[in-house]
Image (cartoon, rainbow, N blue to C red; front, side):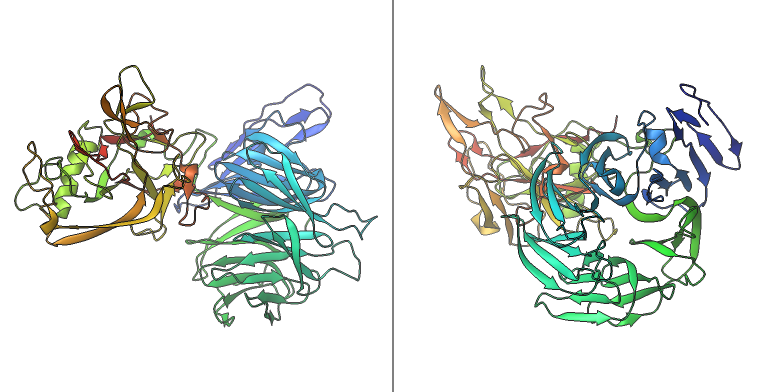
Length: 621
């Protein structure tokens, strides 16, 4: 089909099936249409990307997409999102992962890492010779690469470090022969060296790279032709080699399981592997390595190839004859087949995402079904302060639950009221009627009552509160999972105390001033004391032109800048760090907690106390 410059539009409508896009040519390249087919009525959250390798030299790498909320499977999703990309995705798709707001796909024989937004729209590419697999940490991407060729099989391979902001290669380290999958634990990068070009004398090692110095510090012999690599929850490494499944523990002891595994996925304390020799999906305990009951019968598959275990489903692909369309299967863990979908050639790599896209619109459900404002207050526990029991108003008979409802009445649904967090450590926990997505730029604005000093944006009334975020990992609808801090400007200040603790007692409620004679201790508590922990920021109060004011911090704190400064009162979920200060990638967040991070009592105005006047999801209009 050599119709230079011509584009033929097709529309074919069948039973819940739609052909969308262009079937024609970009120069001499065929334009494959994006086809949406309804494959199931079952509804699950989010979506699933399927990277199909395509045959080497055929330029048929393909990215499909399954909308789990509508049950539609879209063949060649990348094509519909990138109509101007001349050769579409490229030659041999080898790995796909989501990291932050972007998708990354390794296209092996096109010697590139394709960088996309979460809807798979092209952002850029990183040119890396014979690239293979990826891992991420902080703001860096790490990519393994054969580097050498079949003609020069003895050349050592490399791992490249890439800055995810600039897409520039920053460092390179030589490892073993033809390195394949990589994973990162702490400040160590692990990569298996397959020696894929070394016929009859494969490599058999695992390289350990120190990420600080970016040097290979150890090489461990594990087994012939290792290709797949995963880390379990305890830090043990699971390696798929030519003849067995290998577990390497922290003491460098090796345990071997007799199975020729070509794919592995670990969920919780279970490792799932595809045995290419027996056509079995096998399951093993990551605790004692015992074999568990086989979750799914795949004995009828021609060539089991791709595998992904998620909380609510097990996805397995069949590459069929490797030269034509494969099949994606979705199973329950009791073995029930939910649905299947026809894929591109050699569906090998799966990536579950939180986004549900459609060619008929954008995310599903649409943002019109969501409120941009606070929906629910889950917890409210202020530190002792002069406005406690006043904002909101305590009345006899109130308890913690009723005080949360009073907080909702004044800060939820754009009510334009205000609550106090009292003294240091006092906090409120709230959420929206949806998970707030981590997208490009700022994600959420949290309102307070800060203001600038007349004629200055450097000083004013600043009562900074720290923001914590949490994902509902156990899906029970309450904020009882791990909390992560959104890193603000003073996070690394040497005077910031990240392990401060204070105990408030009813007997210690003696700090009343002439304007506020009521109890400062939360009257609804039945306990006579309570202890709060968190970070304490250094004092910021100064005297300027005879006025007692505070320094305005650069970014990252609630009630620090005026609400009219949207950027100054907004937060990026990409700022999240764990308890060790390491960056954490969160696709979306369910719960927010704000606590007062300062401990200052001023002569005229009393304690500095973070106030909250609402919050806005900036992605919902």
